[in-house]
Length: 338
Image 1 (tube, rainbow, N blue to C red):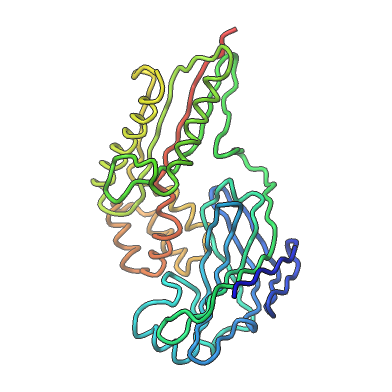
Image 2 (image 1 turned 45 degrees about the vertical axis):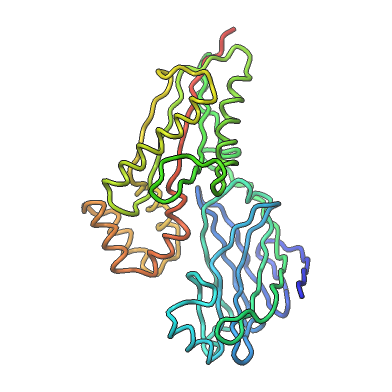
């Protein structure tokens, strides 16, 4: 049976949901990342015999949703079952506890890439119960917890990931960011793949907004593509170049813009973005990973050291960070006549 409980809440207030209490709730944007912290009373999440309880916080706004790191609480038999299988009940990296060792209050902290739809989003707590050998025991119960509205003023103000920069005389520049996703090792744009339709629509909207300005003429479109620090460096050089050229070709196919108006740049591995995520994270080996990133080793050596020394942390980065380091930044320089 699915149950929806609606309770309004304020930051730093207390919310009671299904005998679980949330205190010190904090949702905070940190540049390109969204940080979620709260104190979760675990007494309402204890499993029965041969049962596992999984609690997954989710940010939601309309048709958009972003799951955060789940919390798994295991009965004795379930704990040994999943330990032997080498898996987690949630199927992903989680905060895992045996029932006899679960803390009374969990200091929960997670971080996900920031998206503009998160402004005004709602935080839900989704609860799953799994029975013997991983089978589903009951349907999910969704509990609405709190509103979130980001009013933070930052140095660069993005509105739908687009920002107007450089206002000087008749010259303007409109910049933005798109997260166009490609299948593994592919360099061909698939508009229907993942969220590409919306991301490409955002890119087109930026160009259309310039073209709609009376007297505006486009002088240059700069497209810079980034790959993530995953896999061999030489291969990432190729992927960054070919994928950026694919996005340039996509834009050129839609608009009558001369080829010499385009400028293409690439960043084969986005180590700066990785460092930003790790620095703001609560990873167990955060300091050690930062030391590796800041070192003078070759990129492939850095990746190997992080993966081999801190595999659990690397799995978190694979899920929550690296996919969002593969991005395309663009800037449209134009001039206003008359």
